Image (cartoon, rainbow, N blue to C red; front, side, top):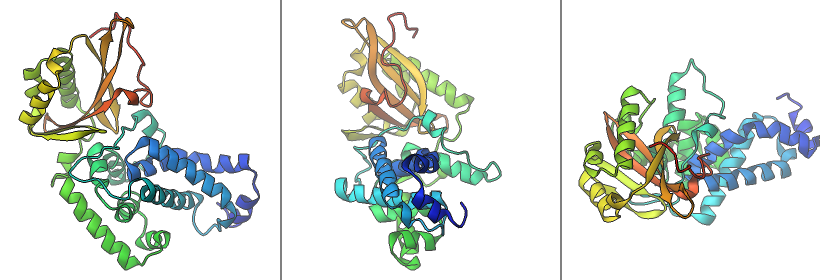
Length: 326
């Protein structure tokens, strides 16, 4: 943006302002989602960001890009929302407010530079559920520092200016945040991120899908790693270990289900399966749950189950017809 951007931004009408700022909406939404862990809360934060930006448009002085200015506003909007709704971070490995993010919307974020594969990998890994869960265990300000420094690559002095703090304080907060992340992520990077889906992963997901539709608990158990984790936000409860996960499925009556169908999808750059259950009064298969899978070393290491209310946000069919194939 040119040096006279402050004058231009201060004088434009609302339609022109929206034209300048809306191009950044999706990436700001993803930023707020990383901060908040909730798709719906991110929607609220982005709306607040654009409202604040419009009201304060005359304060934009062109010392930074419009994009960076919007990120500053969005970060503060998230911090304000956290102070109001969730003053305390998550504990115990569970994030009750966690919601999935559809891959088709992530595709709207401008692609990273192909010459910087590390930046592309970071963008992918930091949207996966394991990373988001770990982030939600950090206090809000260290969380903001971590995301701004390690995900967006902001210099420490810019983060300090945004937070009204010193560079030393920001660097200290970053070290604490990184230490906190290590407490909630496996030591090896490849163990907490699934990476690009390959043929082996696709085959494993196919077997998981088939065994689930057949409610074959033994076949499912054989696909799980010994230390598999399973949760179902916002329902409380985190099961850790194959025996605990399988026992929970049996107690919940999974093996008694009949009339399941499945649709393969992907959310948060992870393989996922949407399950539908036959409902005789409706004469159709209706949404049941979405299982998001983390696959490591040829086995399922984490299953995050979301309720049927997330189907519309993920662009999934609201029903499957009676003749839907298994």
